[in-house]
Image 1 (cartoon, rainbow, N blue to C red):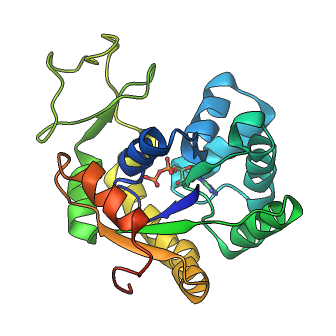
Image 2 (cartoon, rainbow, N blue to C red; image 1 turned 60 degrees about the vertical axis):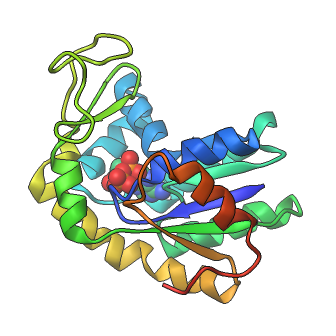
Amino acid sequence: MRVVILGPPGAGKGTCAKIIGEIYGIPVITTGDMLRAAVVEMTPLGLTAKSYMDRGELVPDDLVNRLVTERLNEPDAQDGFILDGYPRSPRQAEALERILKTSGKKLNHVLHIELEDEAIIGRLSRRRSCPRCGAIFHLDNKPPRTSGKCDACDTELVQRDDDKPEVIRRRLEVYREKTRPLLDFYEKKGLIKVIRGDINLTDLPATLKRVLNSRVRTRSH
Ligand code: ADP
């Protein structure tokens, strides 16, 4: 099972990716997390990536393409994977086509998660995350048990630099300019499945199973 998840920032790609990974027992490959880890480790990639990420811009395609190519060559990704946050530009989509073609593999689904800008801004500006274990909270909808502390590891929660309002607006523009066109690219291949980004968490696993098992497209975007 090879799945790509597309959708605006804050639509819930990470949440869906995790559930799908558990359902099918396949690794979730999240370029945002990989890049943030590189930033923390201060690798050459991380040092370059940080300036783009802080502004809400895309990290250059060739850097991300290289990162993903290496990751997809690892043993655990040979029988399936979920790509969360990649591809994000036409050049990344072309690179993914080449990677898959070389190994004679195909994508099964491209899941498009839809959510309107207002909901996105509300979500991201109230989002807090744990810099240590990556757990995500929301000040209103999913507050931590102890204010400001991670439920899982007790670390002080932070707001991601790119979850500040000006940067959120830029991320949305970048999504519309660079990533949204990929919906057409995958639509033509008949791969798109659509779900709403505000489906109740309890219903999400069943909805994802239903959508990914259905052979018919649920509806076009
Ligand atoms: P979101 O989807 O909520 O914007 P991510 O964690 O996926 O958040 O991405 C955060 C930032 O990491 C992006 O704004 C971008 O700078 C960088 N990034 C992540 N994935 C990619 C990618 N595939 N190509 C280029 N930049 C990326």
